Length: 336
Image (tube, rainbow, N blue to C red):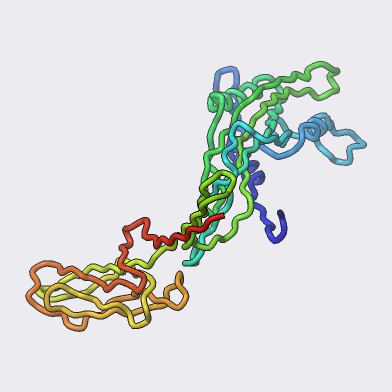
């Protein structure tokens, strides 16, 4: 299952960064008795466990503390507390995402994502009730009860997704009991759930150009058996012309076609103009060619409107590029 498929899509890392970004610019203002702003503070945010913050808060400097100082409040911190599968968002696991690449013969693909819920706890630490309320009242209005952020989920396939951050619960601790020698703190705990999607290995898949279907007469796979083979046939090149005055000016290739021989197709231009095709190897068909450009041999004259350009059909037929189902079909019937 994992052989030759090492990958790391950074889904949890991106979620942590996105979560921290949401709460990284909270400021509070302190006012005097007259209502004048005397201090503006940006509330620091860090990823750490709750216990580590509490131990720093309680760390009052002493002779034995060797210069260590207590943490400055107010402050915020967050940590991951759980990760669980979300069965309600499950979809068919055999579906795939695909995207064209620089290769003309393959596409990048991966199976659909697997849904998981990431639970995080956000802690608001304050040394007084007023600071704590100023922070919490800036957070709550944005969660009703969720808030969405856009994350570049899988850059290889160009997948961007809105991740829902759901506010699940709010807890409150007031550690005001104790002696005057003990440092007190107020702690708000907000529990959030992020709706994540985990993608697997992104590999390359060759373009499907042939399919084989076996159809049996009976559910027991007995009786008449019909084998149907579908192969994508070559399509004819197309182009458009422009004129300058009453003569041909240029012919642009709008579709290069496929399945041609190296000599190329004949190019017909209405009126008295003449042109020929310049060929290049067809990356989808080994040993075949496609139209790279068209060279005007004789610009002609007397054109009052843009002439039509017609290319000879390739060896495989005369299907057009706009025919979405240009298949060659073969039948083979046998009996079991």
